[in-house]
Every structure is written in structure tokens, then in C-alpha cells.
Image 1 (cartoon, rainbow, N blue to C red):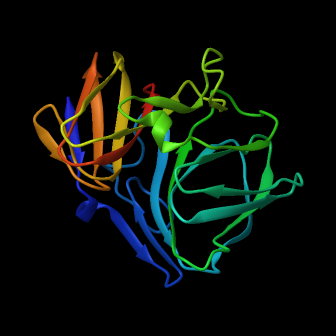
Image 2: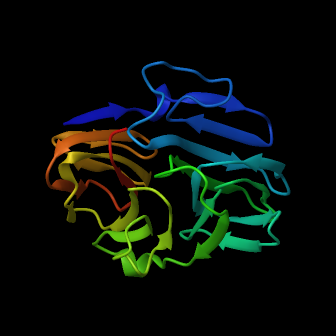
Length: 234
């Protein structure tokens, strides 16, 4: 099954320096029909102006994945980590028992990110941070695991959740499959382009909530870049 969440229906907050769209209830946006999708608690589509960003603030017991769509994001935290993540690449922050961090666009151009929050498998993990390059060519025509709570996914960033975040880049006309499993939940967003899933068009920055889907088949209607969260009901 697929339920479409059009980009135009998302929650919206324009702070000037930050133009944010919320797939799920977040901050001042609350929709009781869209609070979470299984362990997926937040999917924010953020556009950050040059030289601006999120000042130092705390998090606890949350797995936070940042997928950079355009530009770059610079991270700094209370554990002494400092890093810059570029377009197409991913960073993961496991907030665990507590961490304070900032995220800034220190570039001269606009930065666009997906910020994805997953509920952890338990409370009280040690906090950590990491970033990893995932070249688009490596994802051409296939799903690549970007972040995972499964030890078998050795090339992915580690998260403390029974979940995966995967990505693929497709040329128009290509089809890619992913073994989601009927007992699991998926949430797919095209960062670029448009795809066809179960006869429904999913456009750029739309959300597609997936359930009871043993094998997910995604057909590219345009050259596309897609991100999928694979998780469990909670």
C-alpha cells in the first residue's frame, strides 16, 4: 500500500534564513494524522540561507540523519566533533544520553537538506557523530545503504535503530527494487525528479508512506535521486 503526502500538503515554517517543510508534526506544526511513521519521527525538508544555521542546542535519545541535497552543512558538537558534509553525502548524530550541537551553512550558496529523525531501539546509548561520502555514481541504478542499525551493513553509517536509510540515483526509465518486507514500513522521498510506485506518481519532495509491501518497485519518470527509510512499526 502507498499513501501519498504531496509537498504542497506538508507543514511549512518560513523563518527567513530557514524555509522548512515538515512531513510530520514538528515544533509549532501539529497534525494528529501525521505524527510519525513507525520509528520515523521527523522528516524535515530544510532550505538554509548562506551564512546561517542552527545555533548550539541539545538533543537526547534520538538518531538524527542529515542528507545534504545541495551545498554543504558544517557540524560542531559538545564532544569536540567538527565536520563538513557535502551534497549527496550523509551525517549521523546519535544523541543518546545527551549532546549539544550546531549546524551551519558556511557556504556562499543556499544549502538544502533532509533531516531525518528515528526513534532509537532503547534509551541511553552513548552519543556519537559521523559523516560519510556516498558518491552518486555508486548509487546509480541501485539502492545503497547510507545509515543502518544492522551490523551486516558494514559500509553504512551506524545508527541505534531497527532501521535503514537507503538512497539511489536513477535515469529516466530505470526501475529499481528494494526488499522492504510486508511487516515493515517505508517512507520514500525523491530529492530530485519523479518516480512511479504502485501506479502513483511521487514528485520531487513528495512523501510516499509504504506498508504491506514485500518488494518495493520504483520506476523513474525523470532522472531522479531518491531517499528511503525502512523501519518497523512502534
